[in-house]
Each structure stands twice: as structure tokens, then as C-alpha cells.
Amino acid sequence: MDVDDGLAPAAQLFKVLGNPSRLRLMRLLEHAPTTVGELASRADLSQPLVSQHLRTLRDAGLVIAERHGKEVTYQVADEHVAHVIADAVAHVLEPAGAAGPSASTPESTSRKA
Image 1 (spheres, rainbow, N blue to C red):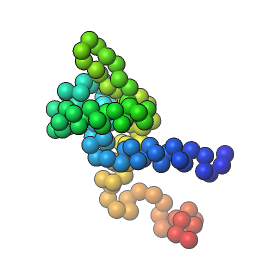
Image 2: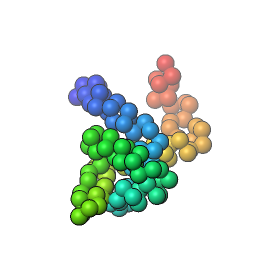
Image 3: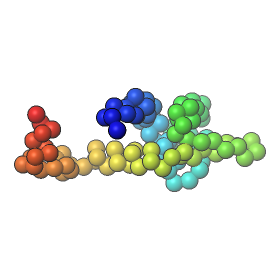
Image 4: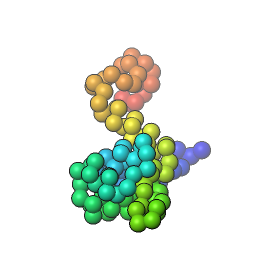
């Protein structure tokens, strides 16, 4: 496999996820399908803003919507994305230098070069 395979779509994914409000919505949707109103309340955002972010996430294939009468429920479309977000959050919350190879390993030496 070529090292460049999938980089453009991955970059687009990170671009869509590069907004704290969209990340918050994705984290809220990890556990259960949720309505726009519930998301707005839990994320402390206006309902129109939540709808706009959900449209962006839906267009990117990150969430799916299901209508139940007058309400629309959203859920994460792919658990892989939820794991990427959880890993990113865990990474930034780690103490500096706590993760990764130690400074004396060949892998870390080659990365510095």
C-alpha cells in the first residue's frame, strides 16, 4: 500500500473534526442516539447552531439521522471515528513525554532525524 493512500480523505476528516463544538457533539453522540434539542441543551449551544454542525457531520458521513415522527435522532455513523476522537483527547490530556518510545530507542532517533 502506498503511504499516500487515504491521506486526502483523512485530512478532510480532520478538517471537519477541527471544531471544538463538533467534537463535543460527537462525544455526546458516542453513547446513545440523541435529538437535536437534547444535544443543544447538553452542549450548551443554540439549536440552530447544533443543526448546522450536525449537517456538516452528516455530509461528512460521521453521523446518521433517523426521523421518529417530528423528531430527528442522530447517532455516530462509525465507531472508528469515536475511537479516533477518544484517542486524541486522551493524548492531549497525557503529561508531556508520558507516551511514545523512550529517547534511546531507534524509532525515536529516526523520527528526530
